[in-house]
Image (tube, rainbow, N blue to C red; front, side, top):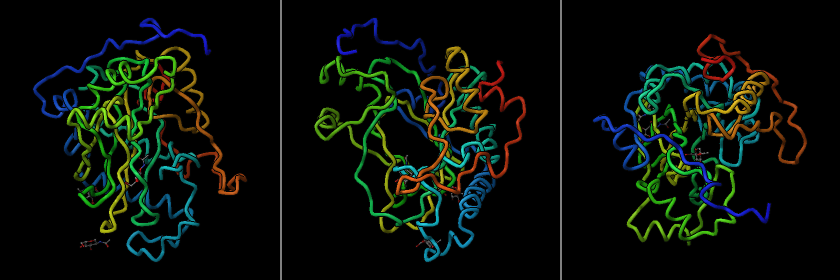
Length: 329
Ligand SMILES: *[C@@H]1O[C@H](CO)[C@@H](O)[C@H](O)[C@H]1NC(C)=O
Ligand SMILES: *[C@@H]1O[C@H](CO)[C@@H](O)[C@H](O)[C@H]1NC(C)=O
Ligand SMILES: CC(=O)N[C@H]1CO[C@H](CO)[C@@H](O)[C@@H]1O
């Protein structure tokens, strides 16, 4: 609506604040907008999930050997999004994806963040990036929260399953930016351009605002089984590996939020998406939109390798139904 006037009443303020508790990572999440929860998953579990992710890729191309770059035939891999993630072929609901989402250390971290264990989880994607398959792309700084949503609405998560050293692909964040984006929108942008869409990109000129405040990008280094968490208002992007990296970056995106924050409509839509093994956005409780179920080949035709259900169906226990929003707490 072009004539809509944006006022404070067309912004949604979150009642939530992080409880600063003396836990270092939680304090850092509050002050810097991101944190690493060390050893959220035991290393052998992380290794199991990475193995399952590779096996899933091998189900499309049995010749793929993660230790032999000459077998990495990009043309045989399933269709990825523009940002290297897998979200088609029901992968989001593979058994191993649901097992990872139920890891006690991951649930525990988000329970501490929100102060409740009655959580919903996002139906988000898998990133398996083989090194040096494509030329590096430029940074794509963005946040995943609409300018009209004020305060803490969403905490995103990455379950790290692969080594993330200085040369490897990893999440890049602008520490401290979560505290400045609202001022940026209020002073540098026109409210009539604000959307409800939970995704805002920043160009070089926008980034000058943050640089002039002394903020700088930082690649988040992570150890086996670490969980990386960040505020959706923290500027971030998926960092590229350098030419020296030989790591197959493997991460699962998983965000959790209190079930009580979801509207009836969001909950119903989430339940429907679950029933068709669909993927949604990074958000667990709001902004629930079914992404395309069917992958398209580069020429635009439907991928005949389409899978209407996971290769290995998840074990649907009560916890899964609750996290999926199918069964109320
Ligand atoms: C990756 O590089 C390290 C250090 O150069 C080397 O020790 C390791 O064997 C390599 N791994 C693979 C899978 O090539
Ligand atoms: C997936 O990982 C690769 C390698 O680090 C990175 O280039 C890409 O941006 C990541 N995708 C997302 C959505 O972060
Ligand atoms: C930094 C680091 O060592 N990361 C680990 C991430 O997870 C994989 C799979 O378990 C490990 O092999 C890596 O060592």
